[in-house]
Amino acid sequence: MSEVADLLPQHVPALRRYARALTGDAASADDLVQDCVERALTRAHLWRQPGNLRAWLFTIMHNLNANEKRRAASRPRLATIDEVPEPSRPSSQVERLMASETLAALKLLSLEHRQVLLLVALEGLQYAEVAEVLGVPVGTVMSRLSRARDRLMQLSGSERAAQPRSVT
Image (cartoon, rainbow, N blue to C red; front, top):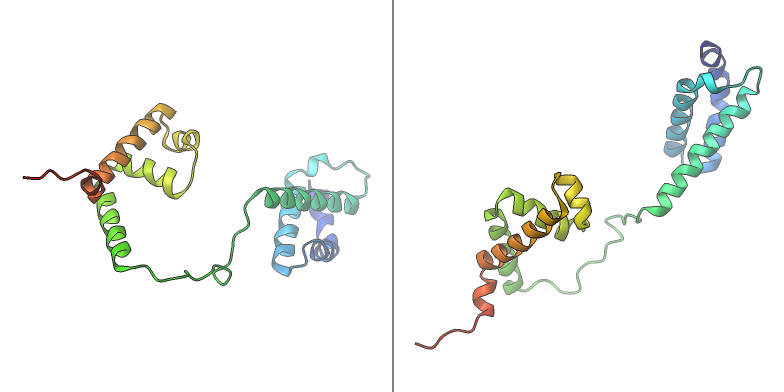
């Protein structure tokens, strides 16, 4: 490892140039170089001597960049705040009132019910993912979610509005 550590600094400027060409961004290029150097130092025992260290480093960098591009392609693209459109119309007073009632009712749910409801409804996780996050079986997630939804409807007054009123 000491030989790689000794020879590595002379290759950093070339690595930075290549990283800049790959990424087109100075900050991303610096991150890529740092990842490459870290990978080279932790895997120095894999370098075949008297192999071409520069070629080995460029291979590491190329593979790191390709892996990152694959990961980025599989992730949804995040929109900047400037790209998010303004609502077409402001919410009405009734909608705001319903939203505040729902938020107040959400705070009254038990922690277990609130966790499941937020992970499924707000974060969009699948039941299996929620089960993994919380360390419970999928059936427990489904049960808690059903109870949480029922309780939330009771607390927010939605159930009262949905039930026919009796005439007295």
